[in-house]
Length: 378
Image 1 (cartoon, helix red, strand yellow):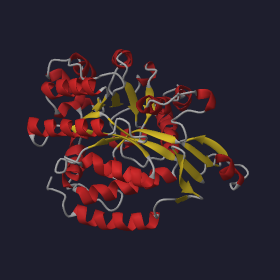
Image 2 (image 1 turned 45 degrees about the vertical axis):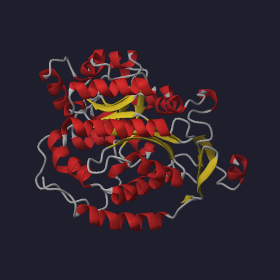
Image 3 (image 1 turned 135 degrees about the horizontal axis):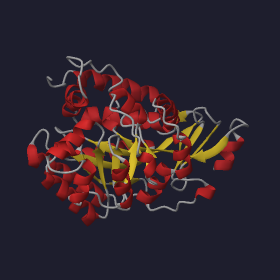
Image 4 (image 1 turned 120 degrees about the horizontal axis):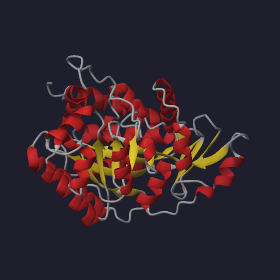
């Protein structure tokens, strides 16, 4: 198939591995379509959550979530990103929510790893238990799915009790999967952990056995070198999200270089990994970080190695990283012409094979308009 695609492509075209977005939020897919501004300007990262993202996730129902996921996955594939590692929240629609995300990924042909971010911020411990049950159900259902995997999820640790953290770790170990959790994205997470009697949020997770091997620690902005090395020793992956971190003004992660298990994510920004890598380089320059972080990510091939680990596929850097059959055909530094996932053609000549982008966007705009009327008061 690849030879045929190359023959019909631009003579400058090359074959490269499909992109991997190691941390994102499909539920944010409708946000660019006219989401109203918050009622007042957020003064802190926690207020950004309270006034923007937590209002959005509480408003989501099945129809809005489905439209959001479909648009996000479609645009990801067209950008050459074949795998999405998603961290999901929709407090009014927990049971079955991961199925909606999986159905939309399957519909378009993407590879998806998904977890529900259990939290106590709306309904206490019972809400957290429902989130963990949704993870357990999905993981058990998709152990052998060729393009789907589940993990155990936790929202930021400052929104859950020690009991919930402990239960998440126990569940992950019982299921043989890692825990996907936001850690030290902002200083507030560090301050909360210290108030609870821990040295920091990473130390809290480790003390409560909440990070089984192959866990994903998103952000890690406020982790110091010692904490990063502890995460690495525990077998956890740290995911850097430069565009989101810059947008939220949470700081610059200066210690992630100390781990050999670092990947690149977008935290809900569009899944264009070339744009994310460019932002990484630009933000490093602004911060005076003299390490060549883009080269560091490329050398370690982090996101692709993580993907191969989660799907149990062979990882051989000499023939290209990623899961077998996830490739992009196109000219360097341009949008891909063709995209193949698991041996199946999903983008041909810059267009989706299984759906129509214009129709997806039109439906998404309809659902976005309805969703904005459902936003709860701040």
